[in-house]
Image (cartoon, rainbow, N blue to C red; front, side):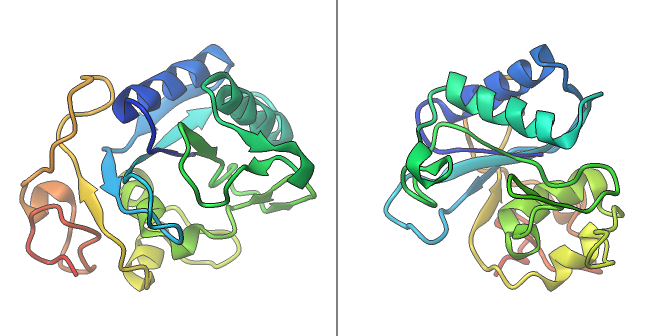
Length: 200
């Protein structure tokens, strides 16, 4: 799942979302670092904090979607029920966004959702943290690994690793670690301003 926030205390929002996922039966077994990212499409809004988490649950994907939307509502996200439950402003600011990226190796398409997430391959702010925890995971529709999708991604928006993590509850600071410590290998382009010198 991809988590994103650009309103209020962004680091605390991520921490609370993970806590509420656990309380609703979704066990978080892995999580990426946090990245500060520039907004897409609607530029006049605060920058986001994004991360990716891997969870285990016993529910069906539709129930998992319900849990994610329930948590978003509990945390104060506003949706436009007249437009099918989408955000009041599409691509606009939000206190929390929880997107299901993969559900095992399943491909699912219904009126409620599409899995894998239909736009994930176009979004560096999703692929960069996902690559940290699941670089070899293969997209069942595109038949390419996450690492391959990241290397081919044309999204040039800023994706910056930040210091600290969601458990430590530290403030947001741009990290200046080396390419090796960030995972920017020689076989792929840098995904953001992590200090390796390979940023676009």
